[in-house]
Image (tube, rainbow, N blue to C red; front, side):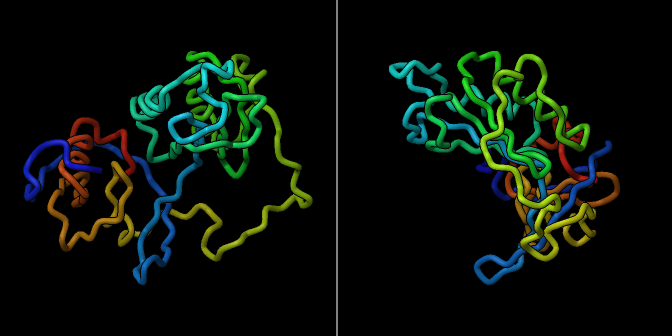
Length: 226
């Protein structure tokens, strides 16, 4: 995240009380370095005119025109970035059914079509949050029932194939991983060089920028820190 305020050299350590939530991480190699990636419950992909969709968001093609902010503002307001990633895409494929979105959660692809009512945006996030809270895929609520369908062929096997070692399971991050994660933006930050920190539940939490520290101090319990 880019700094939103405060000194770029603010290295103060602020004690904070509260309770956070545990997270799981996986270590991956990138550009010759080992980095920690926080594992999320899923991602929401929204077909967007601003991202060069061919139909979704185009009023002249009979779709509800919506700016990306309609989705991103709701996502930010709910503070679910540490559980659900939001991505704006170009064409997702089923153009005749647009506006389209794809919710990938708990290993399932949940397709949403005909999202041509602004009231459906919070309904999608309500549905995602309900599944995150339940820890499993749920039937869509009545408001979304007509907007959810199965696009992909079913898996030929009942068991999910594991394509990468260490990528399956539900283990918590170890302490060394925990101490490197900015709980607001989920970036890997080196504690030895971190300029922005707070003390929370007896340990030092690092941030990549003053804006992340400010967001955390405003509501520590909303972020992954356990």
